[in-house]
Length: 435
Image (cartoon, rainbow, N blue to C red; front, side, top):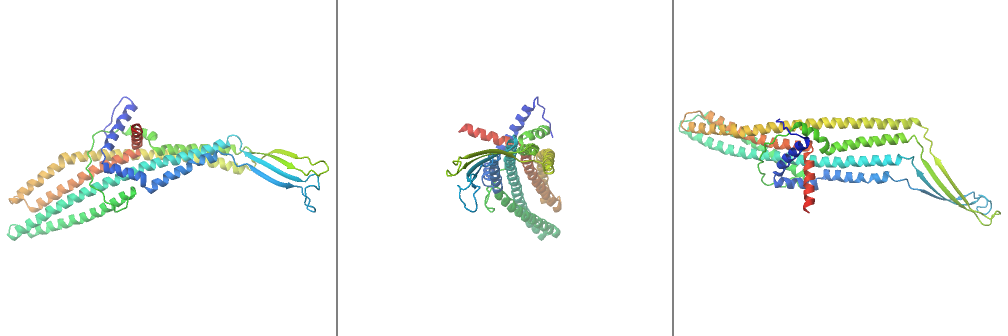
Protein backbone atom coordinates (compact mmCIF):
# COMPACT_ATOMS: atom_id res chain seq x y z
CA UNK A 1 0.00 0.00 0.00
CA UNK A 2 1.24 3.52 -0.85
CA UNK A 3 0.35 5.97 1.97
CA UNK A 4 -1.16 9.37 1.19
CA UNK A 5 -0.08 12.30 3.38
CA UNK A 6 -2.41 15.29 3.67
CA UNK A 7 -2.86 18.04 6.19
CA UNK A 8 -6.40 17.20 7.26
CA UNK A 9 -8.70 14.20 7.28
CA UNK A 10 -11.32 16.18 5.38
CA UNK A 11 -8.92 16.80 2.51
CA UNK A 12 -7.92 13.15 2.58
CA UNK A 13 -11.52 12.00 2.35
CA UNK A 14 -12.27 14.48 -0.43
CA UNK A 15 -9.39 13.11 -2.48
CA UNK A 16 -10.39 9.56 -1.66
CA UNK A 17 -14.00 10.08 -2.70
CA UNK A 18 -12.92 11.90 -5.87
CA UNK A 19 -10.69 8.96 -6.81
CA UNK A 20 -13.54 6.54 -6.23
CA UNK A 21 -16.00 8.64 -8.19
CA UNK A 22 -13.55 8.83 -11.09
CA UNK A 23 -13.22 5.05 -11.08
CA UNK A 24 -16.94 4.45 -10.86
CA UNK A 25 -17.70 7.10 -13.46
CA UNK A 26 -15.56 5.15 -15.89
CA UNK A 27 -17.81 2.12 -15.55
CA UNK A 28 -19.54 0.86 -18.65
CA UNK A 29 -22.97 2.35 -19.35
CA UNK A 30 -24.14 -1.24 -19.65
CA UNK A 31 -22.94 -1.95 -16.10
CA UNK A 32 -24.63 1.22 -14.85
CA UNK A 33 -27.87 0.00 -16.44
CA UNK A 34 -27.51 -3.36 -14.72
CA UNK A 35 -27.00 -1.66 -11.36
CA UNK A 36 -30.16 0.40 -11.88
CA UNK A 37 -32.11 -2.72 -12.81
CA UNK A 38 -30.84 -4.48 -9.69
CA UNK A 39 -32.10 -1.57 -7.56
CA UNK A 40 -35.53 -1.79 -9.15
CA UNK A 41 -36.03 -5.50 -9.76
CA UNK A 42 -34.04 -7.67 -7.34
CA UNK A 43 -36.71 -9.52 -5.29
CA UNK A 44 -34.60 -9.89 -2.15
CA UNK A 45 -33.76 -6.18 -2.11
CA UNK A 46 -37.40 -5.23 -2.72
CA UNK A 47 -38.44 -7.47 0.16
CA UNK A 48 -35.90 -5.73 2.43
CA UNK A 49 -37.27 -2.34 1.36
CA UNK A 50 -40.86 -3.38 2.02
CA UNK A 51 -39.90 -4.86 5.39
CA UNK A 52 -38.25 -1.57 6.37
CA UNK A 53 -41.37 0.33 5.29
CA UNK A 54 -43.61 -2.08 7.17
CA UNK A 55 -41.65 -1.72 10.42
CA UNK A 56 -41.64 2.07 10.13
CA UNK A 57 -45.37 2.09 10.91
CA UNK A 58 -44.76 0.43 14.27
CA UNK A 59 -43.63 3.67 15.92
CA UNK A 60 -47.03 5.37 15.73
CA UNK A 61 -48.65 2.22 17.10
CA UNK A 62 -46.21 1.99 20.00
CA UNK A 63 -46.62 5.71 20.85
CA UNK A 64 -50.41 5.48 21.10
CA UNK A 65 -52.51 4.83 24.19
CA UNK A 66 -54.64 1.72 24.37
CA UNK A 67 -58.22 2.18 23.19
CA UNK A 68 -60.60 3.49 25.85
CA UNK A 69 -63.13 0.99 27.15
CA UNK A 70 -66.84 1.79 26.95
CA UNK A 71 -69.26 -0.30 29.00
CA UNK A 72 -73.08 -0.49 29.09
CA UNK A 73 -74.95 -2.59 31.67
CA UNK A 74 -77.88 -3.21 33.96
CA UNK A 75 -77.19 -2.94 37.70
CA UNK A 76 -78.95 -4.74 40.58
CA UNK A 77 -81.95 -6.11 38.67
CA UNK A 78 -84.08 -8.48 40.82
CA UNK A 79 -84.21 -11.92 39.29
CA UNK A 80 -87.81 -12.55 40.43
CA UNK A 81 -89.30 -9.46 38.79
CA UNK A 82 -86.63 -8.44 36.28
CA UNK A 83 -87.45 -4.73 36.10
CA UNK A 84 -85.65 -1.51 37.01
CA UNK A 85 -88.23 0.09 39.32
CA UNK A 86 -88.48 -2.54 42.07
CA UNK A 87 -85.49 -1.54 44.23
CA UNK A 88 -83.70 1.77 44.76
CA UNK A 89 -80.37 0.27 43.64
CA UNK A 90 -81.56 -0.85 40.20
CA UNK A 91 -80.61 1.06 37.09
CA UNK A 92 -78.81 1.20 33.76
CA UNK A 93 -75.15 2.23 33.70
CA UNK A 94 -72.67 3.62 31.20
CA UNK A 95 -68.92 3.51 32.02
CA UNK A 96 -65.85 4.86 30.24
CA UNK A 97 -62.30 3.82 31.19
CA UNK A 98 -58.85 4.76 29.90
CA UNK A 99 -55.53 3.18 30.79
CA UNK A 100 -52.52 5.50 31.20
CA UNK A 101 -49.03 3.97 31.43
CA UNK A 102 -46.66 5.29 34.06
CA UNK A 103 -44.93 8.44 32.74
CA UNK A 104 -42.04 7.49 30.49
CA UNK A 105 -43.30 4.06 29.45
CA UNK A 106 -45.02 5.25 26.32
CA UNK A 107 -41.92 7.18 25.20
CA UNK A 108 -39.73 4.12 25.83
CA UNK A 109 -42.03 1.91 23.75
CA UNK A 110 -42.02 4.46 20.96
CA UNK A 111 -38.25 4.74 21.19
CA UNK A 112 -37.88 0.98 20.85
CA UNK A 113 -40.09 0.94 17.77
CA UNK A 114 -38.24 3.91 16.24
CA UNK A 115 -34.82 2.32 16.71
CA UNK A 116 -36.08 -0.98 15.33
CA UNK A 117 -37.35 0.83 12.24
CA UNK A 118 -33.95 2.54 11.85
CA UNK A 119 -32.27 -0.87 12.05
CA UNK A 120 -34.29 -2.20 9.12
CA UNK A 121 -33.98 1.03 7.12
CA UNK A 122 -30.18 1.01 7.40
CA UNK A 123 -30.01 -2.74 6.83
CA UNK A 124 -31.91 -2.18 3.59
CA UNK A 125 -29.44 0.50 2.48
CA UNK A 126 -26.53 -1.80 3.28
CA UNK A 127 -28.18 -4.66 1.38
CA UNK A 128 -28.51 -2.31 -1.57
CA UNK A 129 -24.78 -1.60 -1.52
CA UNK A 130 -23.99 -5.31 -1.14
CA UNK A 131 -26.16 -6.09 -4.17
CA UNK A 132 -24.30 -3.52 -6.25
CA UNK A 133 -21.01 -5.13 -5.22
CA UNK A 134 -22.32 -8.57 -6.18
CA UNK A 135 -23.44 -7.29 -9.59
CA UNK A 136 -20.02 -5.75 -10.23
CA UNK A 137 -18.24 -8.89 -9.07
CA UNK A 138 -20.28 -11.06 -11.44
CA UNK A 139 -19.77 -8.52 -14.24
CA UNK A 140 -15.98 -8.64 -13.96
CA UNK A 141 -15.87 -12.41 -13.55
CA UNK A 142 -17.87 -12.65 -16.76
CA UNK A 143 -15.50 -10.21 -18.45
CA UNK A 144 -12.49 -12.35 -17.50
CA UNK A 145 -14.15 -15.55 -18.68
CA UNK A 146 -15.04 -14.00 -22.04
CA UNK A 147 -11.52 -12.70 -22.56
CA UNK A 148 -10.11 -16.08 -21.57
CA UNK A 149 -12.44 -17.80 -24.05
CA UNK A 150 -11.31 -15.44 -26.82
CA UNK A 151 -7.64 -16.06 -26.05
CA UNK A 152 -8.19 -19.82 -25.87
CA UNK A 153 -9.92 -19.86 -29.25
CA UNK A 154 -7.07 -17.85 -30.76
CA UNK A 155 -4.48 -20.27 -29.39
CA UNK A 156 -6.47 -23.28 -30.60
CA UNK A 157 -6.38 -21.76 -34.10
CA UNK A 158 -2.61 -21.27 -33.79
CA UNK A 159 -2.19 -24.86 -32.62
CA UNK A 160 -4.23 -26.04 -35.61
CA UNK A 161 -1.72 -24.26 -37.81
CA UNK A 162 1.13 -25.88 -35.88
CA UNK A 163 -0.43 -29.31 -36.27
CA UNK A 164 -0.69 -28.85 -40.03
CA UNK A 165 2.88 -27.57 -40.11
CA UNK A 166 4.29 -30.47 -38.09
CA UNK A 167 2.32 -33.00 -40.14
CA UNK A 168 3.73 -31.53 -43.35
CA UNK A 169 7.29 -31.54 -41.99
CA UNK A 170 6.84 -35.11 -40.76
CA UNK A 171 5.59 -36.23 -44.19
CA UNK A 172 8.68 -34.81 -45.91
CA UNK A 173 11.01 -36.30 -43.33
CA UNK A 174 11.96 -33.04 -41.56
CA UNK A 175 9.87 -33.51 -38.42
CA UNK A 176 9.14 -36.04 -35.72
CA UNK A 177 5.86 -37.83 -35.13
CA UNK A 178 6.10 -37.02 -31.43
CA UNK A 179 5.86 -33.32 -32.33
CA UNK A 180 2.58 -33.96 -34.10
CA UNK A 181 1.25 -35.93 -31.16
CA UNK A 182 2.43 -33.33 -28.63
CA UNK A 183 0.69 -30.54 -30.55
CA UNK A 184 -2.51 -32.57 -30.73
CA UNK A 185 -2.41 -33.27 -26.98
CA UNK A 186 -1.92 -29.58 -26.19
CA UNK A 187 -4.82 -28.68 -28.50
CA UNK A 188 -7.06 -31.18 -26.71
CA UNK A 189 -6.05 -29.71 -23.36
CA UNK A 190 -6.87 -26.21 -24.56
CA UNK A 191 -10.21 -27.39 -25.90
CA UNK A 192 -11.00 -28.96 -22.53
CA UNK A 193 -10.15 -25.62 -20.88
CA UNK A 194 -12.38 -23.87 -23.42
CA UNK A 195 -15.33 -26.09 -22.47
CA UNK A 196 -14.76 -25.33 -18.79
CA UNK A 197 -14.59 -21.58 -19.46
CA UNK A 198 -17.77 -21.69 -21.54
CA UNK A 199 -19.61 -23.51 -18.75
CA UNK A 200 -18.42 -20.92 -16.22
CA UNK A 201 -19.39 -18.08 -18.56
CA UNK A 202 -22.94 -19.41 -18.89
CA UNK A 203 -23.22 -19.90 -15.14
CA UNK A 204 -21.90 -16.40 -14.35
CA UNK A 205 -24.21 -14.81 -16.92
CA UNK A 206 -27.18 -16.59 -15.34
CA UNK A 207 -26.05 -15.37 -11.91
CA UNK A 208 -25.72 -11.79 -13.15
CA UNK A 209 -29.15 -11.86 -14.81
CA UNK A 210 -30.67 -13.28 -11.64
CA UNK A 211 -29.16 -10.50 -9.52
CA UNK A 212 -30.68 -7.78 -11.70
CA UNK A 213 -34.08 -9.48 -12.03
CA UNK A 214 -33.75 -10.65 -15.63
CA UNK A 215 -34.38 -14.07 -17.13
CA UNK A 216 -31.31 -16.20 -16.55
CA UNK A 217 -30.75 -16.85 -20.26
CA UNK A 218 -30.96 -13.21 -21.37
CA UNK A 219 -27.87 -12.35 -23.47
CA UNK A 220 -25.45 -9.57 -22.56
CA UNK A 221 -23.60 -7.45 -25.10
CA UNK A 222 -19.87 -6.96 -25.47
CA UNK A 223 -18.11 -5.71 -22.35
CA UNK A 224 -15.44 -3.01 -22.59
CA UNK A 225 -12.03 -3.55 -21.00
CA UNK A 226 -11.58 -1.27 -17.94
CA UNK A 227 -8.78 1.28 -17.77
CA UNK A 228 -7.08 1.20 -14.39
CA UNK A 229 -6.25 4.33 -12.45
CA UNK A 230 -3.06 4.83 -10.47
CA UNK A 231 -4.26 6.71 -7.38
CA UNK A 232 -3.30 5.21 -4.03
CA UNK A 233 -5.85 4.80 -1.24
CA UNK A 234 -5.04 5.16 2.47
CA UNK A 235 -5.92 2.19 4.67
CA UNK A 236 -6.34 4.24 7.86
CA UNK A 237 -8.84 6.67 6.33
CA UNK A 238 -10.80 3.86 4.70
CA UNK A 239 -11.12 1.99 7.97
CA UNK A 240 -11.68 5.08 10.13
CA UNK A 241 -14.37 6.57 7.91
CA UNK A 242 -16.33 3.36 7.38
CA UNK A 243 -18.22 3.79 10.64
CA UNK A 244 -19.76 7.03 9.36
CA UNK A 245 -20.32 5.92 5.77
CA UNK A 246 -21.42 2.31 6.02
CA UNK A 247 -25.19 2.02 6.70
CA UNK A 248 -24.91 -1.19 8.72
CA UNK A 249 -22.84 0.62 11.37
CA UNK A 250 -25.79 2.98 11.84
CA UNK A 251 -28.05 -0.07 11.99
CA UNK A 252 -26.01 -1.56 14.84
CA UNK A 253 -26.04 1.76 16.67
CA UNK A 254 -29.83 1.70 16.36
CA UNK A 255 -29.84 -1.83 17.77
CA UNK A 256 -27.85 -0.62 20.77
CA UNK A 257 -30.29 2.26 21.30
CA UNK A 258 -33.21 -0.16 20.97
CA UNK A 259 -31.93 -2.26 23.87
CA UNK A 260 -31.28 0.89 25.89
CA UNK A 261 -34.92 1.85 25.44
CA UNK A 262 -35.93 -1.71 26.31
CA UNK A 263 -33.94 -1.50 29.55
CA UNK A 264 -35.54 1.86 30.38
CA UNK A 265 -38.98 0.32 29.85
CA UNK A 266 -38.08 -2.73 31.95
CA UNK A 267 -37.05 -0.43 34.81
CA UNK A 268 -40.25 1.59 34.47
CA UNK A 269 -42.32 -1.60 34.68
CA UNK A 270 -41.58 -1.58 38.43
CA UNK A 271 -44.00 1.38 38.50
CA UNK A 272 -47.78 0.89 38.25
CA UNK A 273 -50.02 1.89 35.37
CA UNK A 274 -53.24 3.84 35.97
CA UNK A 275 -56.73 3.02 34.83
CA UNK A 276 -59.06 6.05 35.12
CA UNK A 277 -62.77 5.42 34.81
CA UNK A 278 -66.10 7.20 35.17
CA UNK A 279 -69.71 6.02 35.10
CA UNK A 280 -73.26 7.28 34.88
CA UNK A 281 -76.28 5.32 36.19
CA UNK A 282 -79.87 5.99 35.11
CA UNK A 283 -82.59 5.10 37.61
CA UNK A 284 -86.33 4.67 37.06
CA UNK A 285 -88.50 7.70 37.85
CA UNK A 286 -91.04 5.50 39.66
CA UNK A 287 -88.67 4.69 42.55
CA UNK A 288 -89.65 5.97 46.02
CA UNK A 289 -86.76 8.49 46.12
CA UNK A 290 -87.69 9.98 42.77
CA UNK A 291 -85.08 7.97 40.83
CA UNK A 292 -82.19 10.41 40.95
CA UNK A 293 -79.32 9.38 38.69
CA UNK A 294 -75.86 8.43 40.05
CA UNK A 295 -72.37 9.24 38.84
CA UNK A 296 -69.23 7.33 39.72
CA UNK A 297 -65.49 7.79 39.13
CA UNK A 298 -62.28 6.13 40.22
CA UNK A 299 -58.73 5.08 39.54
CA UNK A 300 -57.27 1.58 39.60
CA UNK A 301 -53.61 0.60 39.41
CA UNK A 302 -51.83 -2.64 38.80
CA UNK A 303 -49.56 -3.91 41.55
CA UNK A 304 -46.09 -4.86 40.21
CA UNK A 305 -45.35 -7.30 43.02
CA UNK A 306 -43.94 -10.23 41.00
CA UNK A 307 -40.32 -9.10 41.11
CA UNK A 308 -38.95 -12.26 39.54
CA UNK A 309 -40.67 -11.44 36.25
CA UNK A 310 -39.66 -7.79 36.40
CA UNK A 311 -36.04 -8.60 37.28
CA UNK A 312 -35.89 -11.07 34.40
CA UNK A 313 -37.05 -8.35 32.00
CA UNK A 314 -34.25 -6.03 33.15
CA UNK A 315 -31.69 -8.84 32.87
CA UNK A 316 -32.95 -9.65 29.36
CA UNK A 317 -32.46 -6.03 28.29
CA UNK A 318 -28.97 -5.93 29.84
CA UNK A 319 -27.97 -9.10 28.00
CA UNK A 320 -29.39 -7.73 24.76
CA UNK A 321 -27.44 -4.50 25.20
CA UNK A 322 -24.18 -6.37 25.77
CA UNK A 323 -24.92 -8.54 22.74
CA UNK A 324 -25.56 -5.45 20.58
CA UNK A 325 -22.27 -3.88 21.66
CA UNK A 326 -20.40 -7.10 20.87
CA UNK A 327 -22.06 -7.39 17.47
CA UNK A 328 -21.13 -3.79 16.72
CA UNK A 329 -17.50 -4.42 17.65
CA UNK A 330 -17.41 -7.71 15.75
CA UNK A 331 -18.83 -6.07 12.65
CA UNK A 332 -16.26 -3.30 12.91
CA UNK A 333 -13.34 -5.75 13.01
CA UNK A 334 -14.76 -7.68 10.05
CA UNK A 335 -15.16 -4.49 8.03
CA UNK A 336 -11.58 -3.46 8.83
CA UNK A 337 -10.40 -6.89 7.68
CA UNK A 338 -12.47 -6.71 4.48
CA UNK A 339 -11.07 -3.26 3.71
CA UNK A 340 -7.50 -4.39 4.35
CA UNK A 341 -7.88 -7.51 2.22
CA UNK A 342 -9.60 -5.65 -0.62
CA UNK A 343 -7.00 -2.90 -0.66
CA UNK A 344 -4.18 -5.45 -0.61
CA UNK A 345 -5.83 -7.35 -3.43
CA UNK A 346 -6.24 -4.16 -5.46
CA UNK A 347 -2.65 -3.05 -5.02
CA UNK A 348 -1.29 -6.49 -5.82
CA UNK A 349 -3.49 -6.78 -8.90
CA UNK A 350 -2.47 -3.29 -10.01
CA UNK A 351 1.21 -4.17 -9.74
CA UNK A 352 0.68 -7.46 -11.56
CA UNK A 353 -1.30 -5.78 -14.33
CA UNK A 354 1.44 -3.22 -14.94
CA UNK A 355 4.10 -5.94 -14.83
CA UNK A 356 2.29 -8.13 -17.35
CA UNK A 357 1.39 -5.21 -19.61
CA UNK A 358 4.75 -3.45 -19.73
CA UNK A 359 7.17 -6.31 -19.10
CA UNK A 360 6.22 -9.95 -19.13
CA UNK A 361 3.77 -10.11 -22.05
CA UNK A 362 5.87 -8.01 -24.49
CA UNK A 363 8.90 -10.12 -23.60
CA UNK A 364 6.97 -13.39 -23.93
CA UNK A 365 5.53 -12.23 -27.26
CA UNK A 366 8.98 -11.33 -28.54
CA UNK A 367 10.29 -14.71 -27.37
CA UNK A 368 7.50 -16.52 -29.19
CA UNK A 369 8.05 -14.62 -32.42
CA UNK A 370 11.80 -15.17 -32.36
CA UNK A 371 11.33 -18.86 -31.53
CA UNK A 372 8.87 -19.21 -34.40
CA UNK A 373 11.33 -17.60 -36.80
CA UNK A 374 14.13 -19.87 -35.56
CA UNK A 375 11.94 -22.96 -35.86
CA UNK A 376 11.13 -22.15 -39.48
CA UNK A 377 14.85 -22.38 -40.30
CA UNK A 378 15.39 -25.47 -38.10
CA UNK A 379 17.40 -23.68 -35.41
CA UNK A 380 15.16 -24.63 -32.44
CA UNK A 381 13.13 -27.67 -31.53
CA UNK A 382 9.35 -27.76 -31.98
CA UNK A 383 8.85 -28.32 -28.25
CA UNK A 384 10.57 -24.99 -27.56
CA UNK A 385 8.19 -23.29 -29.99
CA UNK A 386 5.18 -24.94 -28.35
CA UNK A 387 6.38 -23.98 -24.89
CA UNK A 388 6.86 -20.33 -25.91
CA UNK A 389 3.33 -20.20 -27.33
CA UNK A 390 1.71 -21.73 -24.25
CA UNK A 391 3.77 -19.51 -21.96
CA UNK A 392 2.54 -16.40 -23.78
CA UNK A 393 -1.02 -17.73 -23.56
CA UNK A 394 -0.75 -18.24 -19.78
CA UNK A 395 0.65 -14.75 -19.27
CA UNK A 396 -2.16 -13.20 -21.31
CA UNK A 397 -4.72 -15.10 -19.25
CA UNK A 398 -3.01 -13.97 -16.04
CA UNK A 399 -3.07 -10.36 -17.26
CA UNK A 400 -6.83 -10.35 -17.67
CA UNK A 401 -7.23 -12.16 -14.36
CA UNK A 402 -5.18 -9.47 -12.59
CA UNK A 403 -7.08 -6.71 -14.43
CA UNK A 404 -10.49 -8.01 -13.38
CA UNK A 405 -9.24 -8.90 -9.89
CA UNK A 406 -8.36 -5.23 -9.45
CA UNK A 407 -11.88 -4.17 -10.39
CA UNK A 408 -13.45 -6.87 -8.21
CA UNK A 409 -11.24 -5.74 -5.32
CA UNK A 410 -12.27 -2.14 -5.90
CA UNK A 411 -15.95 -3.11 -5.88
CA UNK A 412 -15.45 -4.97 -2.58
CA UNK A 413 -13.50 -2.06 -1.11
CA UNK A 414 -16.11 0.50 -2.18
CA UNK A 415 -18.80 -1.62 -0.53
CA UNK A 416 -16.90 -2.44 2.66
CA UNK A 417 -15.80 1.16 3.28
CA UNK A 418 -19.20 2.65 2.40
CA UNK A 419 -17.73 4.79 -0.38
CA UNK A 420 -20.49 3.96 -2.84
CA UNK A 421 -23.03 5.15 -0.29
CA UNK A 422 -21.42 8.60 -0.48
CA UNK A 423 -21.35 8.38 -4.27
CA UNK A 424 -25.05 7.51 -4.42
CA UNK A 425 -25.85 10.43 -2.13
CA UNK A 426 -23.80 12.75 -4.35
CA UNK A 427 -25.49 11.41 -7.49
CA UNK A 428 -28.93 11.81 -5.93
CA UNK A 429 -28.15 15.39 -4.88
CA UNK A 430 -26.91 16.29 -8.37
CA UNK A 431 -30.06 14.77 -9.85
CA UNK A 432 -32.30 16.89 -7.61
CA UNK A 433 -30.33 20.05 -8.41
CA UNK A 434 -30.66 19.36 -12.13
CA UNK A 435 -34.45 19.07 -11.96
